[in-house]
Length: 151
Image (cartoon, rainbow, N blue to C red; front, top):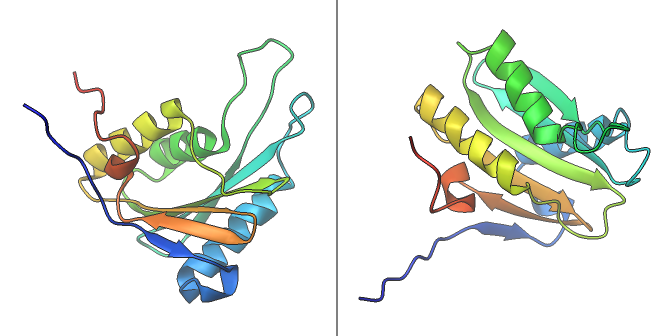
């Protein structure tokens, strides 16, 4: 039996067309790229999360000489949020990169952790992926990983 999986997402041709709250969060993610340590790939990634309280948290990627001991911006941010603000759910996360020739999408590990956080907090996280002047937005991390790992 063949089945089909489809989903809707928002696409914005410029940062100026994003809703103001998303545009501000993308700006925070872009600023976070400046704190990345990407000495090997030279691909700096920044992430910013808006919590239900309105607080904004930041993360950036960190590469290690002992590959693969680095950490992505998204997971740096998510683990920090879980350790320090678990009672304040994440409503949205923006991801951006420098250089920014195309939209910045999360890796597979980050996709799984995003889904894990959604499950724990029992609410979806709006995912804003920005780069190259455009953005794609999903209403939930589950759309990034439809066949997610479940214990």
